[in-house]
Image (cartoon, rainbow, N blue to C red):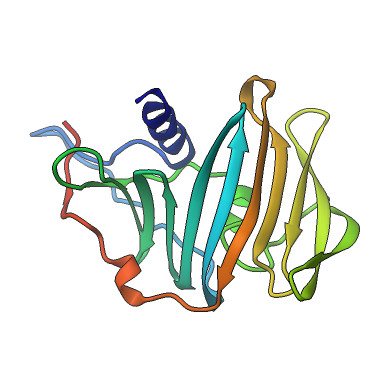
Length: 193
């Protein structure tokens, strides 16, 4: 249970808190989530290790749609909106969320992201192709190692996370296809309680 709560906390920190309004409260005009368009449709499966714990992450990408699954939680970017969904309990729940990502973190969700101040360090064999690895400034005096396939899909990510733990994720499987049903929300988005 502790892992699940930690994942939820991480997702909320990365992608913001649920969007809702109290009764009688005015809401600001919602900012659209403008995900950079992808010319490549794919499904990518990752192994993620942090602080001695191992998990999985799956990314579904097609044009302007994106879904990221981490354990029982999913983030959906559909039609310029972002949603956080969980499959804990009797039935799935979804919430519309605000987005709190840096421009660089957001750009990593698309093939061939811009990497300002990146230093190309090596070409690497990723299955049957040759990809590229970069060192990118991360936090104070830290570097983040990012490797991409020949089609620009993230294949490896290594950096020191909060608290000094190493975060490493690597591509385990890649399919250049995605079923459109992967972008259907598992529940109607609701207000946070």
